Length: 270
Length: 316
Image (cartoon, rainbow over all chains, first blue to last red):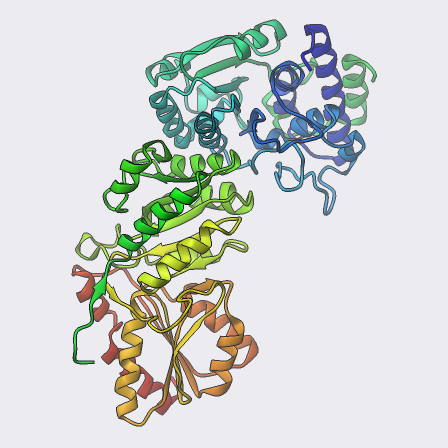
């Protein structure tokens, strides 16, 4: 299952195209945050996670919990491209009675681990799956992906403190550090830095990586651990389409016909 | 009732049952919030140190960790004082446990006004209303030792989320002679009667039985129903009470707005409208012991009997 970095790059491009089609087709979606997390998802599902699309509930699988549930389309596109369900199903996103809700549902979508959406929920759950794997001694690793703005929720720090206390070496928290929350930069809303020192003081090892660099991400996700690890992935909201990059307005916005054509051209055709 | 019945703290049998189940089933774990003492889990911790996960004073994390443990294949019993479990972690209960349908058993310890003098911050009178609003969450309110044991065993062997209240306020046995003492989804008719039905839960059940005794002396035939499961509601038993008696009293150690009384009234008004009186704790309590507060809010045999006479006389 392990992919080369070129294969991960191809996977990421395919995921971005599916995200673009899906959001354009549905007329809704959080495209900026989807694009910022895409390379992280592509690296995890392409070369890191021990998961089987044909047996998505295997007991000793690795867990990936997308705590920033509003990036559902990025997760759906990744799961579909990786074979958890047909790519064709992406066309139903957000339609009446679709399995593909605006936020993911474990009971309807293979590969989804928890029904996320309200922020600050995924981290404690990943701490629970990591403790469970340690009790089972089955080698399962747990990953949770959070937005950076999400770290303003106090529940995350309860989880961080406890994971540090338990020295969970099978847990990796990934922060999609694009610096923007819904309305404005995180630094103007409620400053998170120094994020590395905060996690260090909670008993974590900290890796700061370019969240669009597959080599750096692969290393961050696979190097041996002596503590729980946080990967502060420096990302760009809207990554891959120049007029969306770094723009808070693309948090939740649908491209016009012209913008869609331009984005397609930039991402390359399937 | 003149003779004093022996009374039991349900937390004792709760912990014993959990230990017995943990011996049988390696997947049973406990998650708690610095509540080993108040949940009576010391022996469990001694026997299964790895299987008691104490997150410290952090209820959101506690419920999230439990959801994760369930995802990893375990059956977590979350044991925490009911007000903090249901109030502080309500969104985790909604999203991570009930909506995701994880196999988490939420055990609200020391519910109602059992913390007495500690006051309304530590009382859990809203929990039933909050939990009832959640889609398809079983809500179990064992009334005595035997029901507590039965309910915990049932929860451990049933896939999916459950909320149950485990009382610290000592209560006598009310289910003697009933076997099994706890039947899931069923209300237990403890005393039969045809003039009025008193539907009670938890600590109040023994008081309802005593009230029926007083009413009998007045020539009033009162039926007493122990509603040990509030969700799903045993609608057949409620409908029978509405049809076969002239009035219904509900009595609970919680708010009636959305509580047990609310649940029964919602059903009765749509299916067989009947005069009703809802007895419970509808305001923040003043200072007082748990015993004092039950009396203050009219959850005594005398007050229930008086309400029954009034309801039969005036229809309200």
